[in-house]
Length: 338
Image (cartoon, rainbow, N blue to C red; front, top):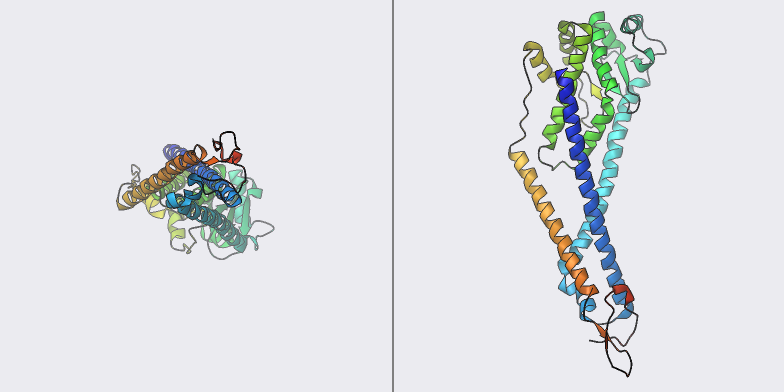
């Protein structure tokens, strides 16, 4: 199954990219948090001691960019975390609202045509919900145990063979747990939209996913014409759906699928390189340089403070002694001097 393998390859590639990017982001935020914590302790110690030592009193003056960056990055990190939570809730709530719109009118018993088709398919009828809606709608929903929602309007306009083909198509999405994968990738894209080529890679996965489902349906039914007729009938009644929905719709990626119907040797092509890729790559490079410069400079500043030359009175024996190299060992005193 050609497109099934391509779908799996696209899925693993996106998963690896997603894991690497999230891991790097966690590491960077951890380093920023660690440095911000130490700067906070330094400032707190300065307020307690009122020492006047160079490494303490002039730390902010000597490194205004670092302290400004810590504040800015702290605000940015908090904002990013808030937006990530809001985006997660938005996608989840919109998907849930859309499903409820149809599932609230679900029938207790399937219509005779649908019941007969499911019996012929030997498909678990508990995995299919028929909603009393005149609009021809069919989609796969659910993260952990996906199910198929089909409207009475769709059952009415399709020939039994066409209906079986449509259900076979959605069966493949149920097997591959497509709604959960779509949610994961769409949420990841909303968080890291600036990554070069990410939008194209997700589009590639969605295309191969739909074409793999078509491939499965044709192999199971043995007739491509029924699938083509079903796509044609439903493509004229495609509703305006929110792109945030983590659902698998039968009428997705129509153009590429029609090209495949017309030419069995057709293979979709995806353009990754372009102006969008260049802008995304440039933004990633700038972000990495800024974060790298901040971490390196802040590490040098902390080392300078911890191993500085601050001195305090130690008594009549020698008059002076060096401050401890560890910041935490500085004792609070009002007699500290250069």
